[in-house]
Image 1 (cartoon, rainbow, N blue to C red):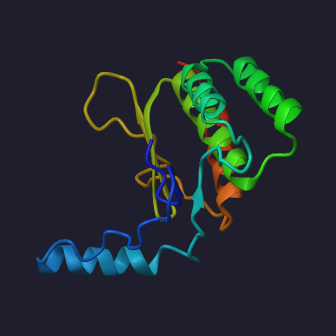
Image 2 (spheres, rainbow, N blue to C red):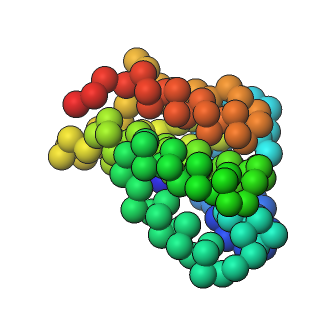
Length: 166
């Protein structure tokens, strides 16, 4: 999963969007067209369990392990409940981590191999065995419209919910 508006770990996000990495004229023109069709910029958010929320390292690692092993929505809801009962209200960072985990679970259930965002494009690759089997609307990738990171994550979840189950 590669969501360009979410980063994981401690520290600050790396700046830049990867444009200007090619020197040929065609790519420069395509990058300029892409930049013009992107829409408003989206803030970035960190998806993590902050030490201020769960101060004991062992417990944080345990929750990360449980999130990584969660393969159903009821299992994720149980982890959410455990976090809320033990540590109180979620920060935006924890909420983002839970939403990213939900995206992973829903993608697996829908037969999606990878979920990526590239500016406003949502790129979901099917696990069909075929190369470049992307979920498309006509000839285009689906577009995301939300400008807030948590709303954008929820928008991805809504998109995945609307896909047919294989």
